[in-house]
Length: 193
Image (cartoon, rainbow, N blue to C red; front, top):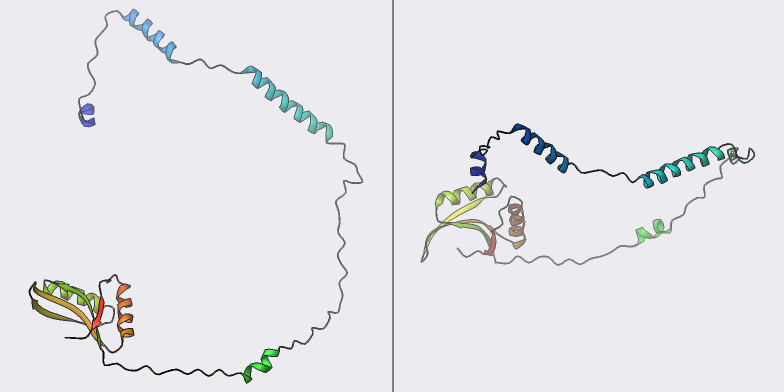
């Protein structure tokens, strides 16, 4: 039986007892049996009270026993203040003199521009509406996406791509910008369209 059925059925009708005096006596006995007897451990209470009184007497007895010579607060004499401060020594740093003489020459090789161009595909959808929605999310990040339609053995697909990028680093930068807005499905490939 569920809780709802139990609650909704209400109380069961009680049988009426014709003998009221008998009912009152049994109720009194039931009440007396339900109330537990509280016993106070008098020995423990007496020990606690005796300890408290003993501690109070001890504090009262030592309150006037302080030695007047040692009861004076300690005073610390301040150090004499000199009117003249010593002169600061002149700081000499050796690196100030030697640093301009050092020059570091670094050879940096120029990055070669490769013929490879990259594209980034962020999604592929069955409907044009879903592809347009993804393109709009990408546009809010300041990037321009294209939708490419392709027919294949699996049917019709609408791919959302970005690019072409001249360097893979540029494609990675765009990919990280899209990750900030929860577009995490982008993949970088060589441009081969």
